[in-house]
Each structure stands twice: as structure tokens, then as C-alpha cells.
Image (spheres, chains in turn blue, yellow):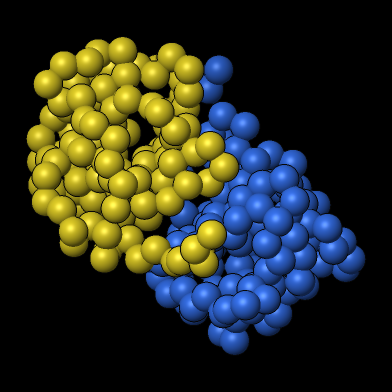
Length: 121
Length: 121
């Protein structure tokens, strides 16, 4: 087995520019640690089987829920509970860390054009 | 159920000063998201059943492994694989995010005086 390596999140973010395409940068048991760049509005969707963690690294992110908007800046975290419909939105570009179980699809139950293939960096 | 709330990590860190006493600030399925302040040297220990994620928020952290020292600054992450003996060390104070399954004991198989009771903020 290769020696385990540290991960510099900004170095990983510098490797890509596309939005809404999470990149796996680490694995914790059966969970994946991902970085993602976000700009514009995503699709409303739900993950029925899992919570989903967003930690903002740079920028200002709004997680729209049906009953509130959650506004996140750098160093702020929000965990979307399983089954809760949500839609991320950002006016400027945002960099965020995502944590969720392996195999979770970014668009959840919604599918569509923004569905991303799994990618690792 | 209460509405889910965002978590500002620096606000949580401002609520305590003791070292080596992780505080749970969020739950992701059966995992806990914790913040911890670190200074000095911990004990060598192993978690036989789980990986453990360290993400440095402030300061410079060394994760000593038996075959290498992993040096982490802000925005750098290291996942200690299950079964790998490790010992965190910091000369100055460090603030870090930890992620691990609910119920993991901070001192793993080592026990002793630095074993912390579970606490939430």
C-alpha cells in the first residue's frame, strides 16, 4: 500500500475550474471527502438515504431549503439532513468541501444535466 | 424537530480553551464532526476499527506515524488509516476539525489520562 498522503485543499482546487463537479480527494471508511466549485444555481433535489455536509472554504454559498435560506461563508458548515429538499446557489464562485457516503449522486433524486460522474484527484 | 442550523467553526472554537478535548459540533449520519484544540504531544494510539480525519483550521500540526511525520498547516487534511499507530504533536496551539464515527474514543487503544468524555457544543 502507498504511504498515506496529506491533502492540501487549495492545491486540489487549483487543478480544475468546472462548477458542480465534485472531486474526491480523500476516503474515510466508506465516506468520500470531496472538493467542489459552485457558481449559479443547482437543481432542487433530495438525498433520501443520507445526510450531506457542506463546508465553505471560499466565497458565499446559499443553501436554499423549502423553509429557509442558509447563508454560509468561509469556515461555516451546514449538514443537510437526509430527505430534506435543497438547492445550492452562489452569485460569485464558491469553493466547498463535501462529505457524503461513497456512491452518492450529486443531483440525488432529481437527475438531469448537472449529474456528475464520480472523479478523484 | 428543530430547524437544522449552520455551524461557524471559529464561533465554536471560541467557546472553550482546553486542549485534547474534542467537541462535537455536527452529526452526519452516524459520524461526528468535532473541533479540537491541540498543543503539546498526545499519546501514541491506534483506532482498530476506523479511519480518522484531521483537517487543520489554524496552526501547524504534526501527525507522527511510526514511519513518517505528516506536517499539516491550515487547509490541509490527513486521514489516518484504521490500524495505523499515530500521535499528534503541536508546538504552538492548533485548531482542527476531526471526523470519525460516533463513539470513537480519542485515545483509541491507549486509554489513560488524556481520554476525553464525549461533549457537544
